[in-house]
Amino acid sequence: MPARSTKVSEKLVLLPETGDADHDEIEEKADFDEDNEQAPTRDDEEVLRRTGGRKGKSYAERLPKARRAEKLARVTAYCTAQAYKMKGTAQFLRDQHAARTKLYDDCLYAVYHLPLLPGTDGYRIRSSPLLKSSGGKTLLDEEIERNEGRDYGEGFFEDENAETFSVRGNDEGESNIPAEANHIEHQPEAPNNHGGISPDAFTFAETFVFSYGVVVFWNFTERQEKDVLADLTFSESETGVTLVTGAQDEEDFETEEFHFEYSPETPRPRVFNDMITLRSGDHMIKLAMSHAIAQSTKLNFFEQRMADQMAEAQHVPRRLALTGQLGMKREEVVRILGALFRSRVDVNLCMPSTLPL
Image (cartoon, rainbow, N blue to C red; front, side, top):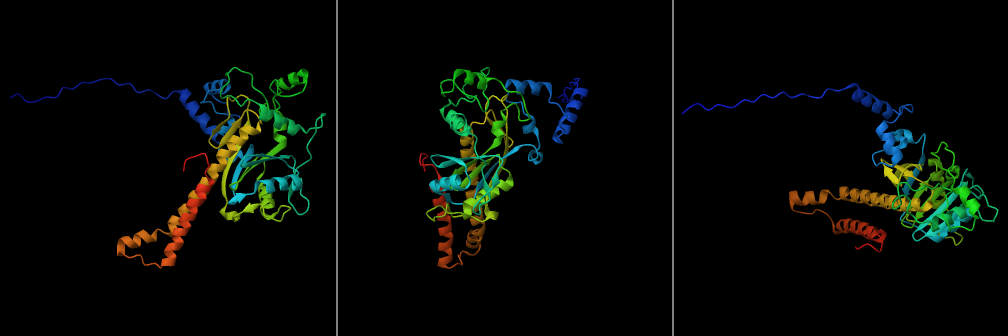
């Protein structure tokens, strides 16, 4: 029998060499990660960003999280209590903080005009007076009415080449303002430091208070957020009833931190890497996002509390597995079961009634 042989096949394989273009691209990314404002975006990313491509990232989205606080406005959610009383909270914010409030089901929307002023009667802050139009209404009220009556396409259902609207934009048939005034409102505004959006959007700070104990702040500083939370926690309505049910200690607060900017070039509102990009200052869009942020914050609170409870009871199954005996009094077992049952009830109460349990 002839000896077995293996056929050897030799092929020339050429490996791609790293060119100067790839080397420059790597250096550019490194410079940008260090927050080099002079570093330009690549040509393909610039085209994608202007044409609404999904891969195009703005400067703010590429900015490291640690550096955003110096340049961008904050969006922060706090889970501070078991529940808020909506009617009493709305009355308090109107009377003591001079804020414009509106109730949307289980969410209270409150707007503060910047800059914030020192509070009165022992409270910490107060809104600046709102500017009024020639018709007697405040400019904020007019903007709220336009946002509520607007068709909320906001880039989700409209053509990519359709005209975008600014924060002061106005759709036809939604206002009694003369046609000439509407034409002026639709004219594109000169670019500014905030991405071409009207500066009116940054003269307001907005708060969304949810009945299940979460508050979402837009365009506040951290100190101002703490002042509002302190006023809500330690104040009482005119009936003498506290506004907060089951208030927590500050070290037990569950928080979520984001930043946001306005950019009319983005095709639709989006969230990337804890960075929110909006096309306009429409408060209804912020309301939808605040719902998601608030529910996420509340779920994180429940998860942390459940993790703490499981950590406290982890010795029970271990002891049963090793000794076969529980080694606990009846009162201790009932206490553990009661804590778990309470957590289950709290989660069920916070779930929307339209969702199946």
